[in-house]
Length: 466
Image 1 (cartoon, rainbow, N blue to C red):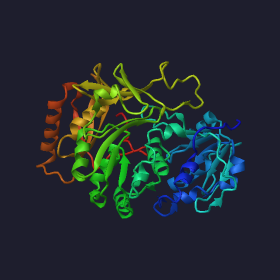
Image 2 (image 1 turned 135 degrees about the horizontal axis):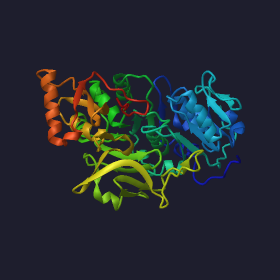
Image 3 (image 1 turned 45 degrees about the vertical axis):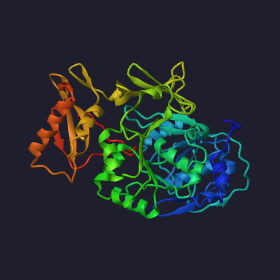
Image 4 (image 1 turned 30 degrees about the vertical axis):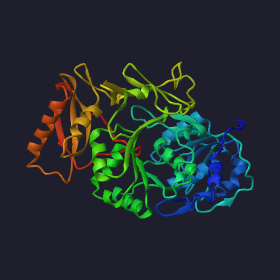
Protein backbone atom coordinates (compact mmCIF):
# COMPACT_ATOMS: atom_id res chain seq x y z
CA UNK A 1 0.00 0.00 0.00
CA UNK A 2 1.38 3.38 -0.98
CA UNK A 3 1.78 5.80 1.96
CA UNK A 4 -0.62 8.72 1.99
CA UNK A 5 0.26 12.31 2.61
CA UNK A 6 -1.52 13.52 5.71
CA UNK A 7 -2.71 16.77 7.12
CA UNK A 8 -1.91 17.76 10.68
CA UNK A 9 0.99 17.00 12.99
CA UNK A 10 2.37 13.59 13.83
CA UNK A 11 3.05 12.46 17.37
CA UNK A 12 6.72 13.43 17.03
CA UNK A 13 5.74 16.89 15.82
CA UNK A 14 3.69 17.38 19.01
CA UNK A 15 6.71 16.33 21.06
CA UNK A 16 9.01 18.62 19.11
CA UNK A 17 6.64 21.55 19.62
CA UNK A 18 6.88 21.10 23.39
CA UNK A 19 10.58 20.23 23.54
CA UNK A 20 12.37 22.42 26.03
CA UNK A 21 9.18 24.07 27.26
CA UNK A 22 8.54 21.59 30.06
CA UNK A 23 10.63 18.86 31.71
CA UNK A 24 8.10 16.20 30.68
CA UNK A 25 9.09 12.62 31.43
CA UNK A 26 7.75 9.19 30.52
CA UNK A 27 8.00 6.93 33.59
CA UNK A 28 7.73 3.16 33.72
CA UNK A 29 8.32 1.13 36.87
CA UNK A 30 11.97 0.55 35.98
CA UNK A 31 12.91 3.22 33.42
CA UNK A 32 12.26 6.78 32.36
CA UNK A 33 12.85 8.98 29.31
CA UNK A 34 12.38 12.63 28.53
CA UNK A 35 9.48 13.05 26.12
CA UNK A 36 11.36 15.82 24.33
CA UNK A 37 14.31 13.49 23.78
CA UNK A 38 12.07 10.92 22.11
CA UNK A 39 11.20 13.43 19.39
CA UNK A 40 14.79 13.25 18.13
CA UNK A 41 15.86 9.72 18.95
CA UNK A 42 14.01 6.44 19.17
CA UNK A 43 14.61 2.68 19.15
CA UNK A 44 13.13 2.30 15.65
CA UNK A 45 14.60 5.46 14.12
CA UNK A 46 17.31 3.50 12.33
CA UNK A 47 14.61 1.39 10.62
CA UNK A 48 12.56 4.35 9.38
CA UNK A 49 13.32 3.68 5.73
CA UNK A 50 12.29 0.02 5.99
CA UNK A 51 9.10 0.92 7.84
CA UNK A 52 7.96 3.81 5.66
CA UNK A 53 4.59 2.91 4.20
CA UNK A 54 4.46 -0.42 6.06
CA UNK A 55 1.45 -1.89 7.83
CA UNK A 56 2.87 -2.78 11.21
CA UNK A 57 1.80 -4.90 14.17
CA UNK A 58 3.12 -3.39 17.42
CA UNK A 59 3.79 -6.30 19.76
CA UNK A 60 5.57 -4.74 22.72
CA UNK A 61 6.45 -6.43 25.99
CA UNK A 62 5.21 -3.50 28.06
CA UNK A 63 3.79 0.01 27.79
CA UNK A 64 7.19 1.69 27.92
CA UNK A 65 8.27 -0.11 24.76
CA UNK A 66 4.85 0.39 23.15
CA UNK A 67 4.92 4.16 23.77
CA UNK A 68 8.27 4.54 22.03
CA UNK A 69 7.16 2.39 19.10
CA UNK A 70 4.08 4.59 18.65
CA UNK A 71 6.23 7.73 18.58
CA UNK A 72 8.61 6.20 16.04
CA UNK A 73 5.93 4.74 13.76
CA UNK A 74 3.41 7.58 13.58
CA UNK A 75 4.07 9.52 10.41
CA UNK A 76 6.15 6.63 9.03
CA UNK A 77 3.92 3.54 8.86
CA UNK A 78 0.73 3.55 6.84
CA UNK A 79 -1.05 1.44 9.46
CA UNK A 80 -0.11 0.75 13.08
CA UNK A 81 -1.96 -2.04 14.93
CA UNK A 82 -1.65 -1.73 18.73
CA UNK A 83 -1.65 -5.24 20.22
CA UNK A 84 -2.95 -5.36 23.82
CA UNK A 85 -1.10 -7.51 26.38
CA UNK A 86 -3.77 -10.23 26.57
CA UNK A 87 -3.89 -10.87 22.81
CA UNK A 88 -4.02 -14.57 21.94
CA UNK A 89 -2.15 -16.22 19.09
CA UNK A 90 -5.42 -16.77 17.20
CA UNK A 91 -6.44 -13.12 17.64
CA UNK A 92 -3.01 -11.97 16.48
CA UNK A 93 -3.20 -14.12 13.34
CA UNK A 94 -6.70 -12.85 12.57
CA UNK A 95 -5.57 -9.24 13.07
CA UNK A 96 -2.66 -9.76 10.68
CA UNK A 97 -5.08 -11.03 8.05
CA UNK A 98 -7.68 -8.30 8.56
CA UNK A 99 -5.14 -5.46 8.64
CA UNK A 100 -2.96 -6.71 5.80
CA UNK A 101 0.08 -6.29 8.05
CA UNK A 102 3.47 -6.89 6.46
CA UNK A 103 5.74 -6.35 9.50
CA UNK A 104 5.79 -6.83 13.25
CA UNK A 105 7.92 -4.76 15.61
CA UNK A 106 8.76 -6.27 18.96
CA UNK A 107 11.21 -6.07 21.83
CA UNK A 108 12.63 -9.15 23.50
CA UNK A 109 12.23 -12.54 21.85
CA UNK A 110 10.60 -12.90 18.45
CA UNK A 111 6.91 -13.89 18.67
CA UNK A 112 6.63 -17.62 18.07
CA UNK A 113 3.11 -17.29 16.68
CA UNK A 114 3.84 -14.66 13.98
CA UNK A 115 2.59 -15.91 10.59
CA UNK A 116 5.04 -16.60 7.80
CA UNK A 117 5.58 -13.62 5.50
CA UNK A 118 5.41 -11.08 8.34
CA UNK A 119 8.74 -9.27 8.50
CA UNK A 120 10.10 -9.38 12.07
CA UNK A 121 11.77 -6.17 13.27
CA UNK A 122 13.26 -6.26 16.76
CA UNK A 123 14.01 -3.18 18.84
CA UNK A 124 15.36 -2.35 22.27
CA UNK A 125 13.47 0.45 24.06
CA UNK A 126 16.64 1.33 26.00
CA UNK A 127 18.75 1.87 22.86
CA UNK A 128 17.79 4.88 20.74
CA UNK A 129 19.06 6.20 17.42
CA UNK A 130 19.14 9.79 16.22
CA UNK A 131 16.64 10.50 13.46
CA UNK A 132 18.33 11.21 10.15
CA UNK A 133 15.24 12.58 8.41
CA UNK A 134 12.94 14.81 10.41
CA UNK A 135 10.53 15.42 7.52
CA UNK A 136 7.09 14.37 8.73
CA UNK A 137 4.32 13.93 6.23
CA UNK A 138 2.75 10.47 6.11
CA UNK A 139 -0.68 9.89 7.59
CA UNK A 140 -0.74 6.84 9.84
CA UNK A 141 -3.86 4.83 10.60
CA UNK A 142 -4.02 3.90 14.30
CA UNK A 143 -5.74 0.54 14.72
CA UNK A 144 -7.02 -0.70 18.07
CA UNK A 145 -8.90 -3.71 19.31
CA UNK A 146 -12.37 -3.24 20.76
CA UNK A 147 -12.81 -4.48 24.33
CA UNK A 148 -14.76 -7.57 23.28
CA UNK A 149 -17.16 -7.05 26.19
CA UNK A 150 -20.12 -8.53 24.30
CA UNK A 151 -18.38 -10.49 21.53
CA UNK A 152 -15.11 -11.15 19.74
CA UNK A 153 -12.80 -8.10 19.57
CA UNK A 154 -12.81 -6.17 16.30
CA UNK A 155 -10.20 -3.88 14.79
CA UNK A 156 -11.10 -0.20 14.65
CA UNK A 157 -9.20 2.43 12.65
CA UNK A 158 -8.60 6.00 13.86
CA UNK A 159 -6.35 8.82 12.73
CA UNK A 160 -4.33 10.96 15.11
CA UNK A 161 -6.40 14.08 14.48
CA UNK A 162 -9.54 12.28 15.69
CA UNK A 163 -7.74 10.71 18.64
CA UNK A 164 -6.56 14.08 19.96
CA UNK A 165 -9.77 15.88 19.04
CA UNK A 166 -11.04 15.92 22.61
CA UNK A 167 -7.82 17.33 24.03
CA UNK A 168 -7.88 21.09 24.64
CA UNK A 169 -4.92 22.79 22.93
CA UNK A 170 -1.90 22.75 25.23
CA UNK A 171 -4.18 21.87 28.15
CA UNK A 172 -1.54 20.27 30.34
CA UNK A 173 1.13 22.79 29.37
CA UNK A 174 -0.68 25.55 31.23
CA UNK A 175 0.43 23.96 34.49
CA UNK A 176 3.98 22.71 34.83
CA UNK A 177 2.92 20.56 37.77
CA UNK A 178 0.68 18.22 35.77
CA UNK A 179 1.63 14.56 35.95
CA UNK A 180 -0.77 12.20 34.18
CA UNK A 181 -1.33 8.52 34.83
CA UNK A 182 -3.94 5.85 34.28
CA UNK A 183 -4.73 2.36 35.47
CA UNK A 184 -5.44 1.53 31.81
CA UNK A 185 -2.93 0.07 29.39
CA UNK A 186 -2.06 2.69 26.75
CA UNK A 187 -2.52 0.13 23.98
CA UNK A 188 -6.27 0.37 24.60
CA UNK A 189 -8.41 3.36 23.73
CA UNK A 190 -8.90 4.64 27.30
CA UNK A 191 -5.22 4.50 28.16
CA UNK A 192 -4.13 5.85 24.79
CA UNK A 193 -6.22 8.97 25.39
CA UNK A 194 -4.27 9.71 28.57
CA UNK A 195 -0.91 9.06 26.91
CA UNK A 196 -1.83 11.42 24.09
CA UNK A 197 -2.96 14.08 26.57
CA UNK A 198 0.51 14.00 28.09
CA UNK A 199 2.30 14.10 24.74
CA UNK A 200 0.15 16.85 23.22
CA UNK A 201 0.14 18.92 26.41
CA UNK A 202 3.80 18.48 27.30
CA UNK A 203 3.07 16.83 30.64
CA UNK A 204 4.76 13.89 32.32
CA UNK A 205 3.18 10.43 32.17
CA UNK A 206 3.47 7.51 34.61
CA UNK A 207 2.79 4.09 33.07
CA UNK A 208 1.28 1.20 34.99
CA UNK A 209 3.01 -2.18 34.90
CA UNK A 210 1.24 -5.45 34.12
CA UNK A 211 0.97 -7.55 37.28
CA UNK A 212 1.80 -4.61 39.58
CA UNK A 213 -0.32 -4.75 42.73
CA UNK A 214 -2.71 -1.79 43.12
CA UNK A 215 -1.09 -0.79 46.41
CA UNK A 216 2.40 -0.79 44.87
CA UNK A 217 1.21 1.27 41.90
CA UNK A 218 -0.48 3.80 44.18
CA UNK A 219 2.70 4.28 46.20
CA UNK A 220 4.74 4.71 43.03
CA UNK A 221 2.22 7.29 41.81
CA UNK A 222 2.54 9.10 45.13
CA UNK A 223 6.33 9.19 44.99
CA UNK A 224 6.27 10.60 41.45
CA UNK A 225 3.64 13.21 42.32
CA UNK A 226 0.70 12.16 40.15
CA UNK A 227 -1.86 14.95 39.75
CA UNK A 228 -4.32 13.56 37.17
CA UNK A 229 -5.40 9.91 37.33
CA UNK A 230 -7.95 7.93 35.32
CA UNK A 231 -9.35 4.42 35.25
CA UNK A 232 -12.49 2.35 35.07
CA UNK A 233 -14.83 2.18 38.09
CA UNK A 234 -13.47 -1.34 38.66
CA UNK A 235 -9.92 0.04 38.71
CA UNK A 236 -10.93 2.67 41.25
CA UNK A 237 -12.80 0.19 43.46
CA UNK A 238 -9.70 -2.00 43.62
CA UNK A 239 -7.60 1.05 44.48
CA UNK A 240 -9.91 2.03 47.33
CA UNK A 241 -10.11 -1.58 48.57
CA UNK A 242 -6.30 -1.77 48.71
CA UNK A 243 -6.33 0.57 51.70
CA UNK A 244 -3.51 2.60 50.15
CA UNK A 245 -5.43 5.36 48.37
CA UNK A 246 -3.99 7.76 50.94
CA UNK A 247 -0.65 7.43 49.11
CA UNK A 248 -1.86 9.81 46.38
CA UNK A 249 -3.43 13.26 46.38
CA UNK A 250 -4.70 13.77 42.82
CA UNK A 251 -6.16 17.06 41.70
CA UNK A 252 -8.14 15.36 38.92
CA UNK A 253 -9.89 11.98 39.19
CA UNK A 254 -11.57 10.57 36.09
CA UNK A 255 -13.57 7.42 35.40
CA UNK A 256 -14.51 5.85 32.06
CA UNK A 257 -15.03 2.49 30.40
CA UNK A 258 -17.84 1.26 32.67
CA UNK A 259 -20.92 2.82 34.23
CA UNK A 260 -19.89 5.17 37.02
CA UNK A 261 -22.62 4.62 39.59
CA UNK A 262 -23.25 7.01 42.46
CA UNK A 263 -21.63 4.69 45.00
CA UNK A 264 -18.18 4.87 43.41
CA UNK A 265 -18.47 8.62 42.74
CA UNK A 266 -19.35 9.22 46.41
CA UNK A 267 -16.56 6.93 47.57
CA UNK A 268 -14.00 8.83 45.50
CA UNK A 269 -15.36 12.15 46.75
CA UNK A 270 -14.82 10.89 50.29
CA UNK A 271 -11.28 9.69 49.55
CA UNK A 272 -10.25 12.79 47.56
CA UNK A 273 -12.45 15.66 48.77
CA UNK A 274 -10.37 18.37 47.09
CA UNK A 275 -10.15 16.68 43.68
CA UNK A 276 -12.15 17.39 40.56
CA UNK A 277 -14.08 14.13 40.09
CA UNK A 278 -15.82 13.26 36.86
CA UNK A 279 -16.66 10.49 34.46
CA UNK A 280 -16.15 10.49 30.71
CA UNK A 281 -18.12 8.68 28.05
CA UNK A 282 -16.01 7.15 25.30
CA UNK A 283 -15.74 3.99 23.25
CA UNK A 284 -13.20 2.64 20.78
CA UNK A 285 -15.68 3.10 17.94
CA UNK A 286 -17.36 6.37 18.91
CA UNK A 287 -14.31 8.13 20.35
CA UNK A 288 -14.60 10.56 23.26
CA UNK A 289 -18.19 11.71 23.65
CA UNK A 290 -18.46 13.91 26.73
CA UNK A 291 -17.40 14.39 30.32
CA UNK A 292 -19.62 14.84 33.39
CA UNK A 293 -18.06 16.86 36.21
CA UNK A 294 -20.90 17.40 38.68
CA UNK A 295 -20.11 14.23 40.70
CA UNK A 296 -23.45 12.70 39.73
CA UNK A 297 -24.09 9.50 37.81
CA UNK A 298 -25.64 9.74 34.34
CA UNK A 299 -25.63 12.92 32.28
CA UNK A 300 -27.94 15.94 31.84
CA UNK A 301 -30.65 15.75 29.19
CA UNK A 302 -29.41 18.97 27.62
CA UNK A 303 -26.25 17.15 26.53
CA UNK A 304 -28.37 15.95 23.63
CA UNK A 305 -28.54 19.56 22.48
CA UNK A 306 -24.90 20.31 23.20
CA UNK A 307 -22.34 17.72 24.29
CA UNK A 308 -19.39 19.98 23.58
CA UNK A 309 -17.12 20.54 20.62
CA UNK A 310 -18.00 18.55 17.53
CA UNK A 311 -20.02 15.86 19.33
CA UNK A 312 -23.70 15.22 18.70
CA UNK A 313 -25.73 12.82 20.85
CA UNK A 314 -29.05 11.11 20.27
CA UNK A 315 -31.08 8.38 21.93
CA UNK A 316 -32.94 5.91 19.72
CA UNK A 317 -34.57 2.64 20.71
CA UNK A 318 -33.15 3.07 24.18
CA UNK A 319 -29.48 3.27 23.20
CA UNK A 320 -27.06 6.18 23.07
CA UNK A 321 -25.91 7.28 19.60
CA UNK A 322 -22.83 9.44 18.95
CA UNK A 323 -21.78 11.42 15.87
CA UNK A 324 -18.55 13.40 15.84
CA UNK A 325 -15.21 14.02 14.18
CA UNK A 326 -13.64 11.78 16.82
CA UNK A 327 -15.44 8.69 15.57
CA UNK A 328 -13.34 5.86 14.14
CA UNK A 329 -13.16 5.62 10.37
CA UNK A 330 -14.13 1.97 9.95
CA UNK A 331 -13.81 -1.60 11.11
CA UNK A 332 -10.59 -2.89 9.57
CA UNK A 333 -10.92 -5.75 7.10
CA UNK A 334 -14.71 -5.84 7.45
CA UNK A 335 -16.05 -3.77 4.54
CA UNK A 336 -19.58 -5.10 4.98
CA UNK A 337 -19.81 -4.14 8.65
CA UNK A 338 -20.95 -0.54 9.03
CA UNK A 339 -19.55 1.40 11.96
CA UNK A 340 -22.06 4.25 11.58
CA UNK A 341 -25.66 4.45 10.42
CA UNK A 342 -26.52 6.37 7.23
CA UNK A 343 -26.70 9.62 9.23
CA UNK A 344 -23.22 9.12 10.66
CA UNK A 345 -24.26 8.09 14.18
CA UNK A 346 -22.54 5.22 16.00
CA UNK A 347 -25.00 3.02 17.89
CA UNK A 348 -22.99 2.47 21.07
CA UNK A 349 -25.20 -0.36 22.34
CA UNK A 350 -25.28 1.37 25.75
CA UNK A 351 -28.80 1.47 27.19
CA UNK A 352 -29.94 4.73 28.78
CA UNK A 353 -33.10 5.70 30.61
CA UNK A 354 -34.44 9.20 31.17
CA UNK A 355 -35.47 10.15 34.71
CA UNK A 356 -36.43 13.77 35.03
CA UNK A 357 -33.74 16.07 33.64
CA UNK A 358 -31.08 13.36 33.41
CA UNK A 359 -30.22 10.21 31.46
CA UNK A 360 -28.88 7.22 33.37
CA UNK A 361 -26.84 4.36 31.94
CA UNK A 362 -28.58 1.02 32.47
CA UNK A 363 -26.22 -1.48 30.86
CA UNK A 364 -25.20 -3.05 27.56
CA UNK A 365 -27.84 -4.16 25.09
CA UNK A 366 -25.89 -7.36 24.42
CA UNK A 367 -25.48 -8.17 28.13
CA UNK A 368 -29.11 -8.35 29.25
CA UNK A 369 -30.37 -11.28 31.36
CA UNK A 370 -33.70 -12.77 30.25
CA UNK A 371 -35.80 -13.57 33.33
CA UNK A 372 -39.04 -15.12 32.15
CA UNK A 373 -39.19 -12.78 29.16
CA UNK A 374 -38.28 -9.70 31.21
CA UNK A 375 -34.92 -8.07 30.52
CA UNK A 376 -32.47 -7.26 33.32
CA UNK A 377 -29.31 -5.19 32.92
CA UNK A 378 -26.64 -6.52 35.33
CA UNK A 379 -25.17 -3.05 35.81
CA UNK A 380 -28.48 -1.67 37.10
CA UNK A 381 -28.64 -4.36 39.76
CA UNK A 382 -24.98 -3.81 40.67
CA UNK A 383 -25.65 -0.11 41.20
CA UNK A 384 -28.38 -0.99 43.71
CA UNK A 385 -26.12 -3.46 45.54
CA UNK A 386 -23.15 -1.08 45.55
CA UNK A 387 -25.19 1.59 47.32
CA UNK A 388 -25.22 -0.57 50.46
CA UNK A 389 -22.66 0.88 52.90
CA UNK A 390 -21.06 -2.52 53.55
CA UNK A 391 -20.38 -3.29 49.87
CA UNK A 392 -17.16 -2.48 47.99
CA UNK A 393 -18.16 -3.89 44.62
CA UNK A 394 -20.39 -6.51 43.05
CA UNK A 395 -20.86 -8.50 39.87
CA UNK A 396 -24.28 -9.63 38.68
CA UNK A 397 -24.87 -12.45 36.22
CA UNK A 398 -27.59 -14.75 35.04
CA UNK A 399 -27.85 -18.34 36.22
CA UNK A 400 -29.85 -20.86 34.24
CA UNK A 401 -33.26 -21.74 35.60
CA UNK A 402 -35.62 -24.46 34.27
CA UNK A 403 -38.62 -22.28 35.14
CA UNK A 404 -37.73 -18.73 34.07
CA UNK A 405 -34.81 -19.43 31.75
CA UNK A 406 -32.51 -17.44 34.04
CA UNK A 407 -32.39 -15.94 37.49
CA UNK A 408 -30.32 -13.04 38.76
CA UNK A 409 -27.43 -13.86 41.10
CA UNK A 410 -24.60 -11.71 42.42
CA UNK A 411 -21.08 -12.01 43.77
CA UNK A 412 -20.41 -9.36 46.40
CA UNK A 413 -17.16 -8.06 47.90
CA UNK A 414 -17.65 -6.73 51.41
CA UNK A 415 -15.89 -3.51 52.40
CA UNK A 416 -13.11 -4.60 54.80
CA UNK A 417 -13.87 -1.57 56.96
CA UNK A 418 -17.60 -2.39 57.19
CA UNK A 419 -19.20 -3.26 60.51
CA UNK A 420 -21.90 -5.95 60.52
CA UNK A 421 -23.21 -8.63 62.86
CA UNK A 422 -22.86 -11.70 60.63
CA UNK A 423 -23.06 -12.67 56.96
CA UNK A 424 -26.64 -13.93 57.27
CA UNK A 425 -27.94 -10.59 58.51
CA UNK A 426 -25.77 -8.69 56.04
CA UNK A 427 -27.11 -10.75 53.13
CA UNK A 428 -30.65 -10.04 54.31
CA UNK A 429 -29.90 -6.32 54.59
CA UNK A 430 -28.47 -6.12 51.05
CA UNK A 431 -31.41 -8.02 49.58
CA UNK A 432 -33.87 -5.79 51.44
CA UNK A 433 -32.19 -2.73 49.92
CA UNK A 434 -32.43 -4.32 46.46
CA UNK A 435 -36.15 -5.10 46.89
CA UNK A 436 -36.72 -1.48 47.83
CA UNK A 437 -34.90 -0.16 44.75
CA UNK A 438 -35.73 -2.79 42.12
CA UNK A 439 -38.74 -4.72 40.83
CA UNK A 440 -38.97 -8.39 41.84
CA UNK A 441 -37.53 -9.85 38.62
CA UNK A 442 -34.38 -7.70 38.97
CA UNK A 443 -33.78 -8.49 42.64
CA UNK A 444 -31.05 -11.14 43.06
CA UNK A 445 -32.27 -14.60 43.91
CA UNK A 446 -28.94 -15.34 45.58
CA UNK A 447 -25.92 -13.47 46.89
CA UNK A 448 -22.46 -14.95 47.33
CA UNK A 449 -19.78 -13.16 49.30
CA UNK A 450 -16.35 -13.39 47.64
CA UNK A 451 -12.94 -11.96 48.60
CA UNK A 452 -12.34 -10.32 45.19
CA UNK A 453 -13.70 -10.02 41.66
CA UNK A 454 -11.71 -10.59 38.50
CA UNK A 455 -10.88 -7.49 36.48
CA UNK A 456 -9.79 -8.09 32.89
CA UNK A 457 -6.85 -6.57 31.07
CA UNK A 458 -9.25 -3.95 29.68
CA UNK A 459 -9.95 -2.72 33.23
CA UNK A 460 -13.53 -3.98 33.25
CA UNK A 461 -15.10 -6.57 35.50
CA UNK A 462 -15.03 -9.98 33.81
CA UNK A 463 -18.58 -11.07 33.06
CA UNK A 464 -19.25 -14.79 32.56
CA UNK A 465 -22.76 -16.22 32.51
CA UNK A 466 -23.36 -19.04 34.92
